[in-house]
Length: 396
Image: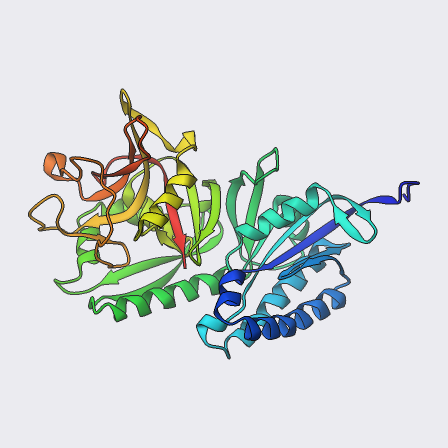
């Protein structure tokens, strides 16, 4: 209904798109990025019109469009990501422009052609949760497309979105399989480049309980394969069980970007390092590898104030989330033999004083600890059989 103020309220499906790593692309080659983005926008704008959408707001690398139907909004997003993926396949990896897309449905206000309201804000926040080249939708959109589109749908759990007062359940659809395969390809390339002698195979498993596709990585190698040997020393049965577990129950409480990578903070009711490792890889990422003070400070900023991640182990000592650090079997001293889950050696450390100490002779993985003083959380070694209330996943 048109009001005297010139404002119009309506229900709409909101489509928010944004370029992943736009600032980095512009800094590397401003002219190429500007030209290529204009070409990609022509493709996206044409598909939005084809599916009955209207572009409402644009700013630099971002697009906001409205659709009368959630089904048409999702169809447009899927075709857009597929069309741009084919264009990106012809470009060097560092030149590729990938969009994240978020879709919500809600009551919005239209003012002079622009759209305002909670639905718009939620779509923008969902877009930031999507993997590059991926699509993230709200539970309302997921419900509306059910039975109308045949898609792989994976729950990201309840999300605490910035400036949104309530939890929003989010789902990743469609492009997630392509994103996971891309992550596996990158990881294989990195491992080969380091000369670790590892071979990484991906076995597609169907998690019946979750109804989604996940990837279980099988690590193979000889005696020098440090990651494989360290994993074999953990509880293999727990690792297998975790790889099959429904990710839908996990609560992803923070997702932020740093240095061209995406990081998600996952809250659990308790889980071993092996379970966290398997779940992170099933999501298409890996437990975080922290390689600089700047990255460590960023991670600490994500987790320090999240009370759900911390458990008081003894007065003034709190144990926190898992990180992707593990110790190769056979290392003699507690500080020796530590590597990251991707096989990278340990060149930067942020151990708390007297850590690692390999207490009990079985502390072969690492997590954040906080000793309740003014210092920020630091690392400590731990047993793989301990339980943690969360972990941090890093996505390439």
